[in-house]
Length: 591
Image 1 (cartoon, rainbow, N blue to C red):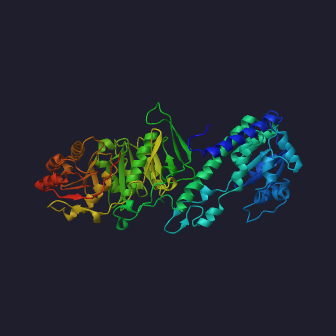
Image 2 (image 1 turned 90 degrees about the vertical axis):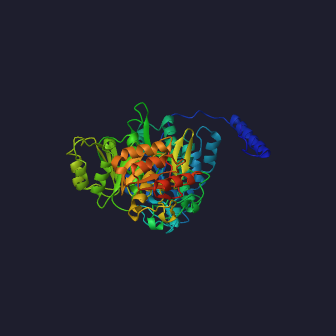
Image 3 (image 1 turned 180 degrees about the vertical axis):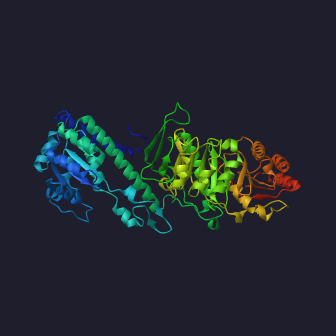
């Protein structure tokens, strides 16, 4: 009956005895079957969100329903011409502790929890002069929308609606009475209806007019109520864990000058338990393939990252679009030093560039691999203007999605009226802010029956920690290219190789089972552009065989993490070829 470790044997025996005693009591108590329809004669109303309250008040008044309420809700409903009984008159006790205690009283909760098929329950109500509530209408303090992520540096909780919400303010927004009322009514749904959203008001009023709520309706209401309190508690639990320092606080990307050699040295441990409540944001046409159903879900209350995207036009986003969009946006975010454009196909960048202007960066990125750029996803890290839009009007070019922090009106007009694919292209604005806030700083990935979690590989590398391991030293003119290439390679699927000319990707080899194959593909993609370029590897070279290919291609310098037991062989091969090589001591696998 009980799982191992549930309790000690003495505790278990006592619990079983108590349960048996309760069962005997039930058997000896004369009971009736629950009625299907419960007429609504008396309700308790306490809502933070006053949306639709006038409609509700007028519906209750028209049906002759008696109403009890608290504070601001009572005043609002009274203003709509409804006679409302103050909860304090029922409890015989005033609201105290600045409103923290007002409904937590037996005269309220007994009226909600009494079972109409239990004569002994009804006898208790009569003995204490307690009247039943047939329905409870409650919505909760909007903790998840008012309170944002805890900022460890400033000690404040920030959000769009409350820029400086201190922890003490956040704690006051934790609703106690509301969830208790909701849970009580939901538990007793056989006899008590519970309404937790203004969206339910019309159906509830209609049910009153039909003679009461049905058992099926009350079960459905209870299910929604428990979903609501579970989601509410999950949001508070995540916030409290961050506030208490039990989980990492997601930090935004920092400038290169403040990068640390290894952020894992200062990162807090992973949480032993992680509460996550997900809500469906978008039902997708299908998944990776047409026979797979799919949707996008996001943590309740979050509107950062892809959870907060705003689609301006075009066809519906697909499952594959969203995967590619995530890859493109994350790389564009890493290229924070200047205007940058990224072109992605099947989650891998086939073009990426930074330049003095966004239009030039976009042109260069698209030219890196024109064949792969057809039907691609484009992401930029600056507002998308008319000059950028004009770059996409070239004949024979087609992109699926363009993502940017914002679009100018001229750019939108051009892209939705001029190219032949104008009706298809999706223009997507992505909000600023750290998308990992809602997941306690963790990147989550599903596997069969479980979730993998890690801190995202989005921190900047620190070139001050890099070292040249060959006799030849890279020319100063290659410093920027080496830096750029090592950023790009981290967003390619392993095994990954990136060949870059200046701050432009010209050849990529990724997803290979051998590194030498990845080198070969990247060099072939780069063609003549490989001469004088730099080459980055996401992990060490296990053998020296790649160096010969790199030498023949005319690569000017190599950057890689190092760490192989054959590093000395690879270094000797690079020395023999006269190619400078830099070790970064940090791997960037992406599977």
